[in-house]
Length: 328
Image (cartoon, rainbow, N blue to C red; front, side, top):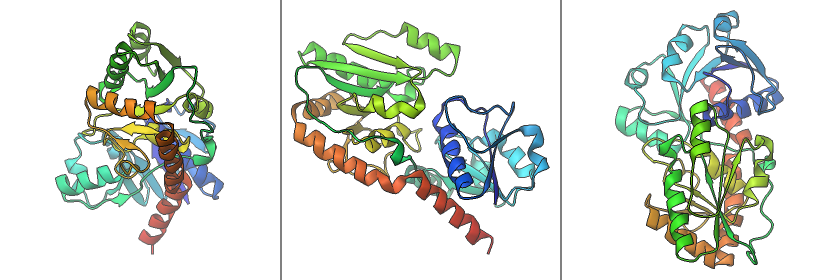
């Protein structure tokens, strides 16, 4: 099959990473995969194996399927020669009522969060293309012992996007540090604009902090393995699939998370800790992990095992099966 996606760029965003991961798997399975962007430039941070092209060349190839996650790009998808014109829904709060009512548009949901949202708000049953993470790329944590050093709390550091909730994690760690807990905050991000970069330069924290900027994506597991727990405070009203939580789980790192993008991933108390989106709740759960090595080990081990079913290889196979069935 010849498959393609329209993306606004190939910078380090979760929605971009989704299709680069899937594209590599499609190519490995013998299919062609083309990423269309305004400038046709490929990613510098990811070893992408497929093809690149520009928006102006969309009509040059008769595609079997063409996706986008961006509602504003759907007119280009609809105008293409693709047999399957697909909107891949990854975020809530978008203006997509017209797309949900369009029978010529097929709709994928990136998570059960999005699937339930589409069903309740628009009455549309979508195809669940839930996931994912390439588990083999993430080395599992080997030791859960914390002796003679601070307890390291890790969180996604995209502070320019307030919906990520990093400020809740920072505030919780500052509170615990004031109370005498030997704690250190580990944040990471790759800024995608000068505004984002300036936000990082201006960032201040009232507890020990390491802010890793521009860490190579293919070495992310090195970062996760330096932490003792991962905390995600993302806003559930916007998120679809939580990439950072999935990556932390693949590293067998104990996770504390809001509901955002984790309905499929997390079984509270079994493979992670589900938290209300309040500073004192995150602080409470961090203290629980701080004090209990066996709890850290149990949650981390279960997280690694449970995330395997959401491997990108499984997602890709589900998508290919869907496309084949639609063509019968």
